[in-house]
Amino acid sequence: MEANRLDPNSLTPQTELLELLKEKCPEVFTEGKVDAEKLRQSLGDEVETGRERYGLSWAGKSDCFRHIQEPTTATLVPAREESVDFDKTQNIFIEGDNLGVLKILQKSYYGQIKMIYIDPPYNTGNDSFIYPDRFQESQDEYLQRIGDKDVEGNLIRDGFFRKNNKDSGHFHSNWLSVVYPRLFLARNLLRQDGVIFVSIDDNEVQNLRMVMNEIFGEQNFIEQIVLKNKAGAGAKPRGFITVHEYILCYAKNADCIDEITTPYSEKLLKLYNKKDAHFEKRGPYGTWALSTTSMDDRPNLRFPVYYEGEEIWPEKQWLWSSERVEKALKKNELVFNRKKDGTWSVRFKRYLKDEEGKIRLGRPTSFLDGPYTHEGTKELDKLFETRIYDFPKPSSLIKKLFQLRLNQEDNREGIFLDFFAGACTTAHAVMALNAEDGGNRKHICVQLAEPCDTDSEAYKAGYKTIADIGKERIRRAAKKIKEGKEE
Ligand SMILES: C[S@@+](CC[C@H](N)C(=O)[O-])C[C@H]1O[C@@H](n2cnc3c(N)ncnc32)[C@H](O)[C@@H]1O
Image 1 (cartoon, rainbow, N blue to C red):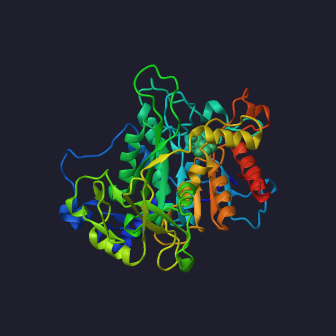
Image 2: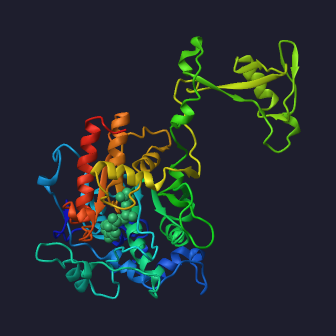
Image 3: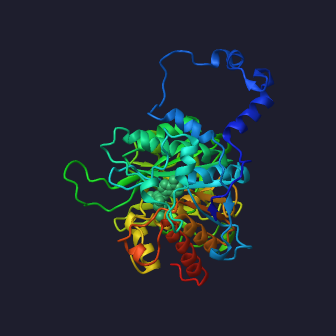
């Protein structure tokens, strides 16, 4: 779909907020407008009146609110001829500036999205990212500019794109002014129990965290995941070799999320390789050492365990209390093996399924050891048989995030959004997950018609814009998955 038609009725966060205020505190309205003094009185001590206060500020922040509040004049136009299964699929690719698109989506997708993943520009200073918002200009000037196209209808690079380099006096401010309004609008789209993941590196992680604390609320911070994204090496003249980046995760409302779990990895599943014939309901089991030397001294965990009349002591201490060991002994959940030196090794059994026969899920950790960035490049190179796009994320990374289970809900449903879609790795990940587990997840990807460099492989192969690459990625990945050729 293309975002380029007029729709004067689009919803804005401002109108939403006003409706809410009217409902909850009609007394603060006078002749249809909010009386700020009355609102202050209603809130009493909850209003911060001191001149110095904690917060994040930058050049252009107040203009961000103007941009958030301006109703969009765009609407979506379906591109039937470019689509596969147009009438059946509810997956959507939208070509356009994500600021306008997020405004349009407010109407139909308010509170509907289960998970958002974005990989915005990291603001490295070397990247030719897109800074389409010039906050000094009027709405008319802005609308005129975003209409800037060449004779073939393509966006003009000079009019639309600016490089944000480190010499710019507003290096961080420019970046913040792009990210803030988009995250603000994105939050509205999340379900109450929805979550957002944002990839970022050290260039802006501190600012992103402040922005997200402000928009989502510190209480809704879930995790700052550290992703090891390369093996090592790399040329860096000074300092440490950086081998990681981050993924910030925030919830719309953390109170609605009691539990986040993740399926066991293949590596872990391989450890569940033994069976108790009489215990089929609980599936295969694995065994783990009951004795540990790596914990702090806990004298209450040092006690003898009795087996075949022998007294068995741990080298240092057991993992479990004596009551828990006692219970496991009664349930035949401990395994004793005589070692060559005549002493005993004691291991405990862990079944893949719980007592009700439900498959166990793991707890995600804040550190991910891969997948590495080069895996994303390799994946896309293979799909296009040439280097079409630099540094796409590996689809396995996004699969890992979208496979997380929020509460006990079946995680094979829901709408997943990426509004910095690039080569549409998110769409690929969602389709692959559905194929793996028979799920019915939907994806929405938004990507600007950013022109490809005319001397790039992509341009030579016929892809004039990154949006063209994204669309073709979706077609190719869907075909490969359908043919069962996805490994
Ligand atoms: C780092 S890339 C995302 C890569 C993606 N995760 C992947 O795996 O291919 C960021 C993308 O956001 C796009 N972008 C930047 N500004 C945008 C805007 N205002 N609206 C929509 N897309 C935008 C850029 O064209 C770029 O392709």
